[in-house]
Amino acid sequence: MGKGGRAAVIKSAKNNNAELPKYTWAEIKKHHTPKDAWVVHQNKVYDVSDWYEHPGGAVIFTHAGDDMTDIFAAFHATGSMKTMKPFLKGELIPESVEHKDSRQLEFEQGYRDLRVQLIKMGMFQSSKLFYLYKCVLNLSILTLAVCMVFFSESTVVHIASAMLLGLFWQ
Image (cartoon, rainbow, N blue to C red; front, side, top):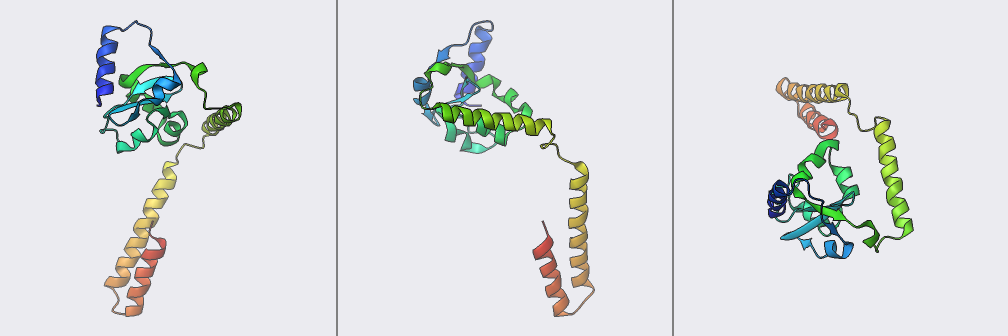
């Protein structure tokens, strides 16, 4: 865990009922390096400084000093925010955000509304039968290709086996 996370855990242990500090957008923009990285998610400020243990690696620092709300939603499962609790540093003062005009804010809200609708429609639910089908199909292709090589001396059959794997193996 990065120093930001440890600091937040120590701080929250001391002030469990204390109100979170408020930060302006200008203050957050100052913390944009891996050694001093703050990110914003749904107007909450997180200190992820030196968090190289992030499962995705140093990619977390690409949004240091910036809003990561939408990118987080795109690449993380629904319950992933629980992992971020130790890094919570404070809250963003929404009125201090100056770089987003109304058009940008409407676009972001539209994106978030669309994501909610897709979740409600079940578009992010995976089908276990589909993955079973894909595994069985791939194993069948592999078995067929191996049998073609093992039971034939023909170069043409060997090439057909290679093409079968090359074209259909996923």
